[in-house]
Image 1: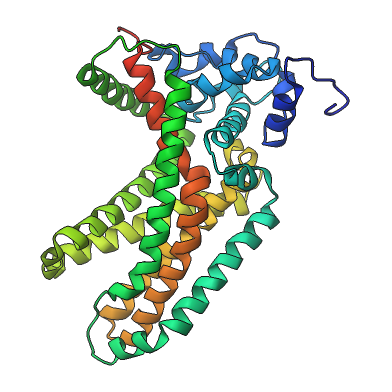
Image 2: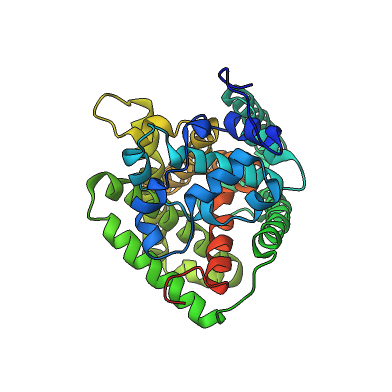
Length: 372
């Protein structure tokens, strides 16, 4: 029973879990199909959001796990604005994605991360952060002081070892979960379209849909926020690869420093903007920032903002000749990175980038794009 209404389905536990994961208007949907009809994505992609919601109402778990429709949703909000029942299809789809993520993860940690309260998540995050602080400001403290006394800013390889170990472990888990997601999504589907053609379809699809959405004010704001986050994360990944493979690149201080500042600033703005809109939400704030306040929405931003700020401060302090402060900021940056990688990167909302890419790939290869 939820809200006095009995779930009538093959597996009522599926309904209850999706409801708890944020799909509180699941039972309000009476399958009119307006969500699919008004969604600009349905013009380019042969998916049915109504069908995905119906699978969930019926509790058909196998169908839910193989459905790419929830991952196709870009949260443009046309469905929620036009729903005649006052339901929020975009929220329901977000809850279904959380449910799918739980089932794709073989470790069971995603179930805790998605299903626990904000307080529980925050405590778990702070415990790991506290242990990271003890590591860097205890075990590595003398090394930090020694390097600070040299008057130069160099990346201490021994400091990177804990982060590297955590990253490799998290990446291995995420890769295996991604493979499980792919097997669920591709099951019983035939690859009808070639790889090259599929990639072209995906590229043209994103360009058209996002270009159209950019013409609408409230959509444009969200797209720009996501774009800034992607740019920031992408640049940091690129800089990390260059540091490992082409360390001499950083001898070009103007170029490397510019990229670092751009990465830090774009990430701080991209994360800080939606976070502040949720915190200061008022009557004029778009409903997106009021509805999407599930604990995972908060933690995806809260865990990413501190390392972005700390890395920016590293180079601000260095350029101000405050070397000891720069090293302390760097140690804090690494301390924040460990819980982010171990929790959010491997099991939180940021895993949705991977599952979304897999869903689009499966959709493109199996003929879901219009014109195939």
